[in-house]
Every structure is written in C-alpha cells, then in structure tokens.
Image (cartoon, rainbow, N blue to C red; front, side, top):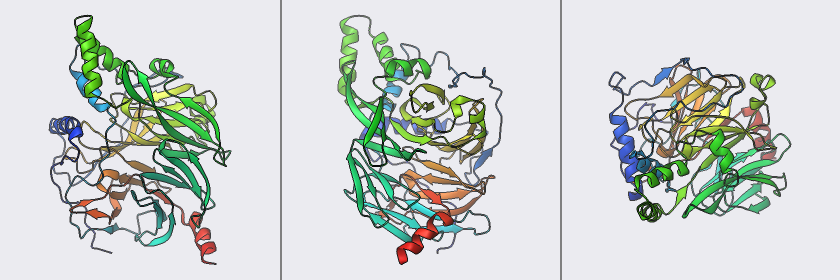
Length: 459
C-alpha cells in the first residue's frame, strides 16, 4: 500500500468530446464566477450544517424556488437548457492528468473508517469485484457482453446486472447465468421487499417533430419476467403539473417558438433545432431505489416504505412515486441541483444524493430533510473543482456516520467523516495514458454479509 496523500495532480478540464464543448464552457464559466469570499486553496472541503428558512405547507410536493425572469420566453437561456438536454456520451477516462504511480488504496485510517467489503463493476470488463479495505480481490464474477454495466449483489451472493441498453441478467456466486431479460435497461436496478426488481428502460419517441428519448420504469419478477411498466412519455402531462417544469424540453421549445415572430419564422427555428439537436433526452432517469423503513413514513405517506425514489437528471429533480399507482408524491431540486445522481433515503428519513454541478464546475454530496427541503449536511471542495464528477457519481452513508463517495469521472472513491476528513481513498488502477478510467458506482457491504459467502465458496 502506497504512502497516503490527499490530492491528485490538478490540470484544467480537457475536452474529450467536441459535442460537449458548450456544456464545458458553461461549467467553467460558472466556477469562475463563484463567490470570491469562499476558500480558494482547495485544501480542505467545505462542510456545512445548516437549516434554511424555507417552509411549505405540510403535504405539498416540494420543488425548487422560482427564479423570476431567467427562463421566460425570449431569454437566451433556452440554448443552454437545450444543450443540457442532449443525449451526450459519457467521458471514459479522468479529465485530470494523474500520477500513474498512484493506484489502489492510498489513504487508510483504520481507526476512523468503517471496515467492510467493497463492491464495484469496472467499466467494459464484464466483471464485478469484491475488494477488502486494502484493495485486495476477495471475489470476482464474470458475465457478457462487456459493455457499460451496473450490478447489485443480493443476500445470497447472486448478482443482478444491468447491461446497458441490452439486457438485465442474473448470475449466481459462481457466475452461472440464472436468467436473462432483453431490455433497453440502463443505469440502475433495485430490489423491492417482495423480491421483485425495478429498473429503468429507455424508448425513442416522436415528440414535437423531434426524436426524443423517454424513460420507463419496469418491474420484473424474481425470475426476470415483466410485471408492469410506467412510461414517462404516457404520463408527461401529469409530470408537467407535479414537477417544476422550467427545465422540461417543452418549456425550452416554447421559448424557441417565442423567439420567432410568427408562422414560418417559428417553424424555421424548430427545424433548425431538430437539425442541431438530433438526439435529445427528456428526463434521463438515472436512479431508482425503494424507500426503507423510516420514521417519517409513519406520519407522512409520501415517505412510506416501499415508495420509489427516482432521479430525473435532465430536469434537476428527485421524485418519490407510488409503486402501485406511480402517482408523484414529492419532488425537489430545480434551481438547487445540477444533473444529480444516486439519491437514497437514510434510516432517519433524510435523503443523501450526489449533486454533480455540471454548470458550477464542482460537485457536492448533500443530505436533505425532505419535509422542509432543507440541506442539513454538505460535502464539497468548492470553489476550485478538485472534487468534481460532471456525468456520474454516488454516495453511501455508512453505519458509523461516515460517507463513502464515488467521484466517478475521476476514478476515485473516498470515505469522509461527518466533519469532512478523508479517512480512506482508492484510485482506479485501470489507466489509459495519463488518465484514470472512470467508474460508475461503488458500494461497501458489511463483513458479516460477505464472510459466509466467502467461506462457502472456499469449500
């Protein structure tokens, strides 16, 4: 294990895909205009415990505060919002140049970390790994094909794998395939209390003369058979009423039309939009999880165990849905979040999430009280962007109160205390040139959950 150090080498963000240039410029411009009163050395993360003054009537869905005038018809902001709605490729390697000698576990504080077994899927390897706290491999599963994927481990050691836009696959501890369901699934899968699974599936729809990606939530049985399906396209009208619509594609397109004087001018703008943005993603749902037992759920049905917590990335909102009726029960995030990922409900009913900060140029991990919408804990490294993952990310609250963070685009995973001190760091050893291969998610399992499986596997 190498000598611990805190910071990776820092260079300016490099463009990997020409089609992402505008997003990059907006992000760096936002970072450059950050509040000059903030600490600029980047050595210590910003940790805030705060309660905001915002209050709302009990029972109302929560959404971000209105920002008057910013997105009114005729504003140039529609161009930025259209760019944010493009279906763009993910970065494959870190944007910072790295010291190629730094790999594996480089920070290890055994007295303050929460010891367990680390689970992850390296990108495009067709495999998943369990690692110990020093980065040694405890177990490996294999599967095919080798494309971008995500997996969860079940209590018996089975994996359920989302092979992006291709299939959902279940394999056992020995990598033997149990079932395979052909679906254009992506990003996430979650197991419900009855053993069924929820996953996200995309479909291409014609909408206002454009080809638009919409997402479905699909429920599968334990055996991989489809039980039911909810379509965001079919329920678009309801979503416009229940969510904050400022970043909705239709709101942006209405602004486009408002810029044309009338008739053919408006039509021309739409045709130009269709040519320029040939692949738009309306919601880009990137996470689904099932709410656990929590004290808030006893008094407020919005937070009842079994409800679905879903992340609508492209409209900057996280949403709670009923699993039976798919009614929107709660929503929050517009003008607070920027391309969020991986919201999960904690045991106390608060929600932990990764806020990517695609425009501001630095990322945050937030803990919010969903009843009032207050941010009660925050980890960031503002304003220099040394903690930044624009396109992916995850966060997990550990039993000792620490938080495990996956800075996905940079191939870095680290654990912080409630005060923001880093007590464990792992750096992806998969390196391309002077850049580290990105990750998707990382999770830590209890040793008790894994030890019996490892012993059984050795027999």
